[in-house]
Length: 166
Image (cartoon, rainbow, N blue to C red; front, top):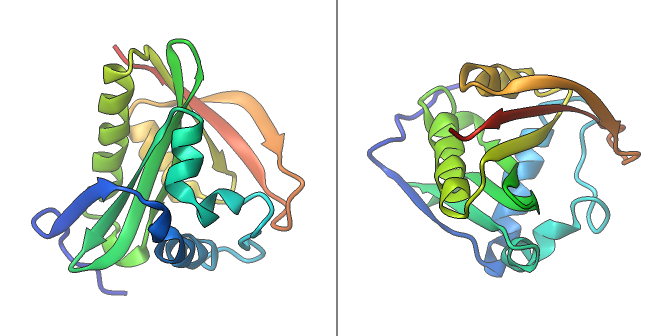
């Protein structure tokens, strides 16, 4: 698989509800890399139908990332309680990986969380997404003992990570 350098050609923008098809294709492509991992529309993944409205409705934000006009990544956050937000929906297409984009997007969420007054950030990540686990650990996130099972068609179990935003 060939990757492209992304820093000079990347465009990060606020998501709109019109991003539904591109977002679904991006996440579906990421899920396809893992046996048994499937999209569940309109079930657990229903937020992708109107992504901007879904995030705004819970006080969060979602960003889309384009490279040469193609959607290659997304990331967002939602408040969980006062002073704490959850990093959500970090998906990077295979073609845009290994160039620092994932770390840049985590930084974007951390900056937005700080601006919103958050002191801590948490996330849940699929137990199969081991590359993402390594990224989060490299960025200072600590894996907690909590797990949760989503009872979805992918039979997802998620791991919990968090860190202070000092």
